[in-house]
Image 1 (cartoon, rainbow, N blue to C red):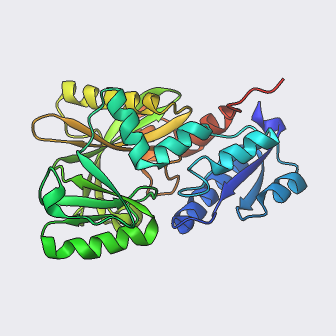
Image 2: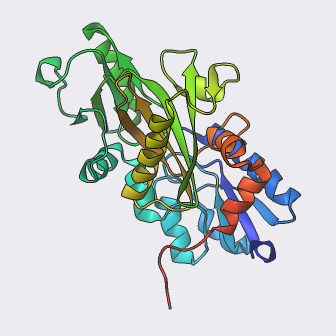
Image 3: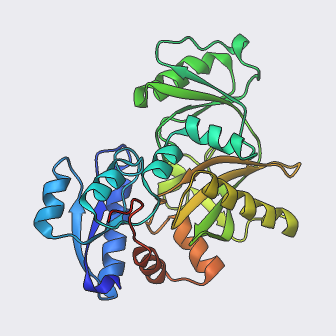
Amino acid sequence: MMKSKKIGVLFGGLSAEREVSLKSGAAVCKALAGQGYITAAIDVGRDLPEVLKREGIEAAFIALHGRYGEDGCVQGLLELLQIPYTGSGVLASALAMHKLYSKQAFAASGILTAPFRCYRRDETVKLADLPFGLPLVVKPVQEGSSVGVSIVREEAALAAALDLAFHHDDEILVEQYIKGQEVQVGILDDAPIGAIEIIPKNEFYDFEAKYTDGMAEHVFPARLEPALYEKAQQIGLAAHRALGCKGYSRVDLLVTPAGESYVLEVNTLPGMTALSLLPEIAAKGAGLSFENLVARIIESAALSIKVN
């Protein structure tokens, strides 16, 4: 159905994840063009409404990451312009991007997440006030790709971690550190398609490990007992549904030695680069090539708000 429409591939953008998005967009453009789709590559700026109108865009493949692209902003603009788009709608995108609100939605659905406290820039963080001790994790409330995230193992390192997180956001989360396997569940068309385990070379799966070849080992399927593997997939699906996501997503979990699965976050626009995890899960778990995955995603493009 989409081959008769002009598709705008939206990438780049204004967030801290711009460079990653440029790579995602280039890969998506190549995959779509190779299958006969009519595409226009659009590096997203503040003139996006004018560009969409000038180019005559009839559907959008959103390959943006981070603020203004993954948080509901672009989705709202596309709804206003009545341009069908890929991925989740405005509310689900906003919830998934905001770590505090997504945690609250998970809790309401009975989904396990790490204990935490939320702080604003003008508030003082004291270890004595926390219901958990070291080690702990400090992260901005609204960033992706582990931007601004630190693991704090000693009190002397806390101030620098707070400064880094507040550099990226006016709100931060301080979480209890959970030791476990880093497992990521792929969701496509409202169903889990597999779980992959990440073994980073760094202390955790940070920005460098995510986007530097050789900095993380990927194990598919994740090294879990069959029952626990299936449980992880179902928890991933439950997290996807708890936020009202649709189309596709990647859900990040920590699975402890005791078999507990803690949801870290839902990525509504996961990376689509050569090192990205959702394409790897789709290939190994569902037998979908990158080209077929991209086609499945664009063919699901729709509007969330119906206008008569």
